[in-house]
Every structure is written in C-alpha cells, then in structure tokens.
Image (tube, helix red, strand yellow):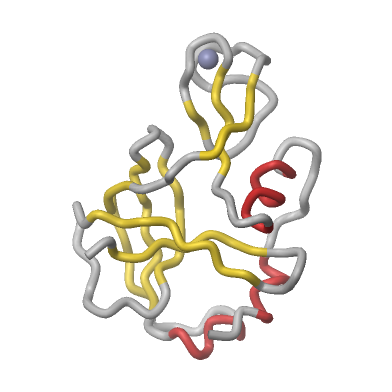
Length: 137
Ligand SMILES: [Zn+2]
C-alpha cells in the first residue's frame, strides 16, 4: 500500500507531541504517563488530564484495545484515501486507558463494536509514519 499522500494530513509537530510522532517514525507507539498518578493519556498535553501534574513521562505501550465506536467512510474526502475506500474510522478504547481516533484500512471483514484491535504503524517515508488499527483476529 502506498501512503505517500498521507504526509500532508499529519499535524504540525511541536515540543508537546513530538515524542508521539517520532516514536511512530521509529516503529514505537508511545503515550504520556503521569509520574504522579500513573494515568496514560492521549493526546499529548503539558499536564496530566487526571491530576494536573506537570511531570509526564513518555512510555512505549502495546496500544491494543477494543472498538468503542466507528463509522465507515464511503466518500473520498482527501485524495490520500482514494485507494482505500470504503475505510473505517474507529474510536479505539486502548487497554492503557486513552481512546484513540484511528483509520482502519483494508479490513478483511466489517468492524463491530467490541472487536479487539491492534495498532499498525504505517510508514509514509524514511522520517514520517502514522497510526492505524487492524482487527486482531
Ligand atoms: Zn496524573
């Protein structure tokens, strides 16, 4: 699969979110984890969503989870998705706690709420990658 067109869809990388995107580029899924209350969180922020502490570490996570909700997209909203229609956009309840909004490309069967899913890092080029999810079965 060719993911070249997805590069322009990536957000601006700043000091707060850089470890997430650099992690994906090196093949790792990373989340922030609070040094005070141990909650994982996403998206990245300068403070803990749960307790307000500013002591946040970046940790590698498995990132597996279950589908909390999803939609199937039939309309081409961006040229990068041209070869992937229809595709699923899911809210994944990660085992670590946070919910992740993610595309699911090239599914072998329709997704269902509660399906187990696993992260799949898609490489755009040598420096950039993004996160999708796949059905675990
Ligand atoms: Zn906390």
